[in-house]
Amino acid sequence: MNLDDFMARLGQVQARSLWIELAALVACVALAWAVTRWFGRDQPKDSIWFGERTFDGLLFPLLALVATDLARRAVLNYQVVVVLRIAVSVFVALVVIRLIARVMRRVFPGSALVRLVERTVSWIAWVGAVLWIVGLLPPVLAELDEITLAFGKTRVSVRTIFEGVLSAGFVLVIALWISTTIEKRILREAVTDLSMRKVASNAVRAFLLLIGLLFGLSAVGVDLTALSVLGGALGVGLGFGLQKLAANYVSGFVILLERSIRIGDNVKVDNFEGRITDIKTRYTLIRAGNGREAIVPNESLITSRVENLSIADRKFGITTVIVVGYESDVAQVQSILVESAKAQARVMTDPLPIAFLTNFAPDGLEFTLHFWVTDPDKGKDNVRSAINIAILEGLRAAKIDIPYPQRVLRVESLPENVSRPEATPL
Image (cartoon, rainbow, N blue to C red; front, side, top):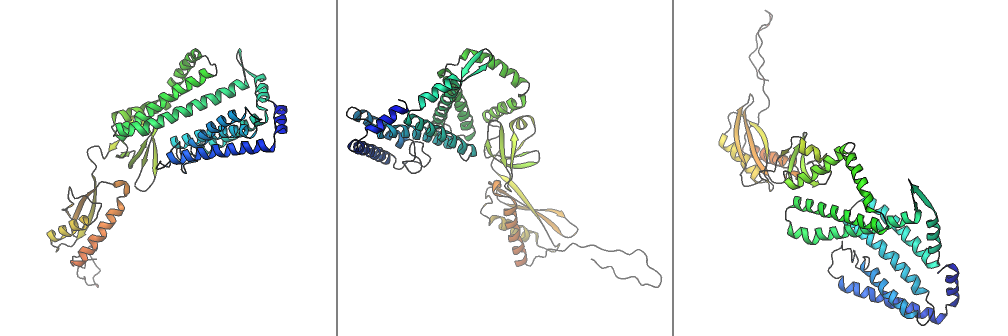
C-alpha cells in the first residue's frame, strides 16, 4: 500500500466503523493487560517478560499485537480497517523496543551504552512504523535498493546492508537472551562454584553468539565459505598485532578453569592488596579495603607472582603492638589485650586472639596481639582501631603505665667552673 492508498482509506472511514475499531482495540488491550497481570504476579522485577510493573515487559505488547492483528483480520471482512492497522504497527515497534531493551539491561546491567542502544532502536522502530502506516516504507526500501556500494568486484545495496545489520542484531539479542536464561535457570542450580559458573556462562554466551552471528549472516545471503579467508586473516592478526589481547582472553579462561584464584579471594599483586570482585574474560577486578579498585590484565595473573591470601582458608591475620612499663604484670597485660580483641564481633573465635611478649624495648615491655578476621574487605584499620581503643581503656582502668619514650643524656666533660649535674632521664 502506498501513500495514495492510505489517503483513500482515510477517506472511506466512517464514524460507525471508527467506533467499532476503537472498541475492538480497547478490548484487545484490556485482554492483553488482564492476561499479563494474571501471569505476572510474584514475578521478579528484572523479568524480561513482565518488567518492573508487569505491563512494561515484553509479554504485554506481544499479546496486544497478536490480539489486535486477529481483530484486524476479522474486521477486514466487513469494513475498511485503519485504526487497527495503525495499532498493529505500533505494537510491532513496541515489541522490538521492549525485547532489545529488556535483554540488554539484563545482560549488561548499569552500562551507559545500553541507553544509547535503546534510543537508537527506538528511533529506527518508530520511524519504520510511521513509514509503514503512511505507505512510504516500500518506496523507501526500493530507493535504498538502488543505492549500491562496491566491495572489490562485489556490489551490495544499502538495503541489503541495512537488513543484514538488523537481522544479525536481532539474532544476537535472541542469543544473549537464551544464554542469560540458561545461566539463571540452569547454571545457578547446577554449578555451585562461582568461578566455574562464570566460565560456563562465558562459554555458553560465546558459543550462542557465534551461532547467532552465523545464522544472521546466512539470513541475508552472505556466503559463509568466504569466512574461512577471514578466519585465516584473523588468526594471523591475533598472532602478531593482537597477541596481548588474545593472551588476556586465553588467560581469563585458564584462571577460571584452574581456579587458582577465585571470586572472593584476597590477593596481593604488585604490592596491591584486595579482594577479587569479578573475573572477566580480559581482566580481573580487585578492590582494596579503602575502596580503590584495580583492573589487572589476566595475563599478569598467569605470568607474574600472585599472593593468594585465601587459598588455604578464609582467615586473615592482623597484629597490633603495645608497650607498657617494666613494672607491669605480664599476665594481666596479656589478658587485657586478648579480652579487648575478643570483644569485637568481627574477630574470629577460632583461632582465639593471642598476645605475646615479643621484645624488651628501651621504653618498656613490648607486646604483640595477634587476631584473625574473615572479612578483610570490610577494612583492617577500623577493627585495629577499635581494639586499640579498648586496650587503652583497659590499661587505664587497671592503672598500667604506658611509658613515654625515655632518653638518658650523659655529659662527658664540663668547664672547670661548672659543676656536674645529676644524670636525669629525658
